[in-house]
Image 1 (cartoon, helix red, strand yellow):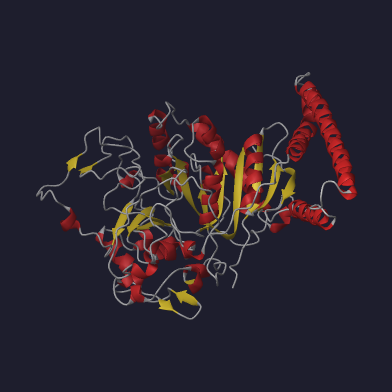
Image 2 (tube, rainbow, N blue to C red; image 1 turned 90 degrees about the vertical axis):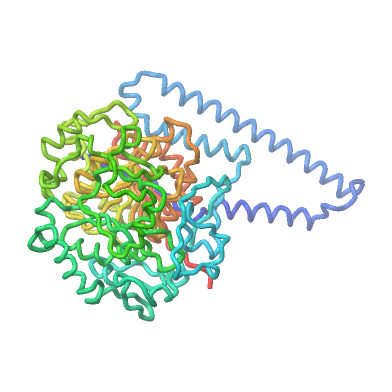
Length: 599
């Protein structure tokens, strides 16, 4: 159901004037004491007068504290009496006032105890500009890395208990171009390249490097051009041309070692969704340049660990000069095909587990022929046979089945939500009179959205609603490790996604997503003891969000209030939106400012 939005409370992420005034007052008092002879002898008349003044000042402070304590006690008693009285009209009539009283009491309590306002996080040193935790030790020198010889970077995440920092963009960073132009041209300063990586290598890495931008428009991406290349692939599997991939049940493609995403960019125009995976690279990164073009990509390697996808995820796999030495890595020397995995190794959603030389998934009820898939875009809704599978399919971590009525309710709810969300994506929301969603179709956001990272995707309903609304964005649907895994359903609907532990860094480069969305993610952490803090997660969001990117968080009132306080530390612009007076949930809409490096 559509939920009305009410006027929220604006809050800036740029710091408040109160903190600066407090520091000014403190320095002014210190200067005043020094200028009036604070270091004179105690026995002098001036010293005696100061002692009397100090005593009077101390008594005044004691009296002020007593007044504050009485005010707090009385207000707290009044608030408690309201909350414990009749729950009918009194609750609904005074709820907003009660919330404001609680917030005011908390602020008064902090001032009376002398608690300093939350400090803003510092900016990271320049060498963190392309920092990817779990893959790169920032102390290593770029000069020591051989950009020609391939280097395998094993994913290894170590939790750092120290407070994080905010990564600044490169000196000449510019906001990416809108689609479709942005798929063929990117700003050179936005990515790290040295030029050495293009002196030799795959034809998929061909591009034109100009003074300010990089162009991927050429007829020589592949041997005979990318269009001819995909046409040949279609013929190899018995199709007239690449336009028939959809009819044949192909929607999602995994492109291993994707070059710079030219294959995926071409398939995107044919309504195919291609996920590029490649190793972490210090410079000339395939993943970074592909994402900068606005095409799905993430860091991943087949060298020793399974990727965080369920089995039976993709409709097609592509590997052209992808750097995998198949014969060298096959140490069994077998003549027959690989064996079928036993049940102990047949894991539905492996999360960076060791590789197993066996075929998995054939026991799954999801094992159906590709011809039986409903063609795109009808497969978004899943047919009765597929929903029947999920009616029997027990979701990981909980003994829960997916029923058609749950699926339909989720879809209807997200359709109304997307209309409201889209109308809020404007800097006007941070003014005193934010734009209100109207009945007409809202105009596009102030700046474009090419991609969205959904941190708690559930069924993938947000992704489906964006498509239904005609928004030309793709969504990285993330299923947290501490939630039921609906990732197989997300892939069966024709979307892409990944399983992830949000106490670890996401496998991507900084500044790669235009919007981050999280519904109910913070509540997941309240059910189990987390290895990380909420601030750790927010610092990671800031890392992967591009300047002027958007954050939409929906959760319970208490968690949203806590999250809102952290936006000040992150220097985000933020506004709290009330969804419905009968709901305990609130919405937090944020925008990351563009902070430039000091020249």
